[in-house]
Length: 179
Image 1 (spheres, rainbow, N blue to C red):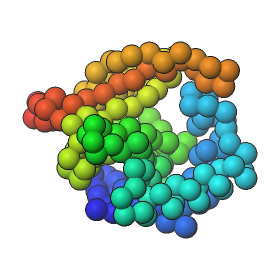
Image 2: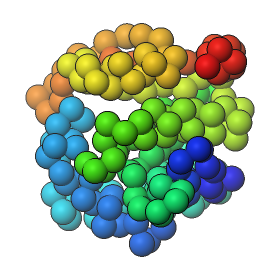
Image 3: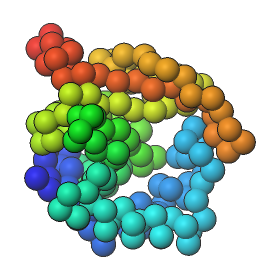
């Protein structure tokens, strides 16, 4: 499946026309402040080409999605499922939201959509995210979506200490039945 929708969003695999928004997000210091150093324009362009290639491989372990507002078709951000492991039946979800779309509920909707897509499309048993321990806004987001707190990963010279948060398929069904 190459596209899916949520209430306000369309998530579709990256296309070459998405390079500018991808590069803008990955080179923006504010967007990257809790993720890692912003990429140089050249490195962001290389990362985009790699993400584009990986997303369109038949049996890829990485899928990158352009997330667009369903009514306006404006970019909301980039979402991803990475490290898709069909043996261990788990994958990592990630999001970058454009500045004008932050604090409008898009991140919550997008993360819910990615998790639902991962469980439905890949038959996974677990989806996880890794976030900076100091990023309390995103911590509230993942708690609200129903993820459980996991192990802390030590900081290195270029990154904050991070924490793994995850949800298993059975807990996802239960959480969504309640909400």
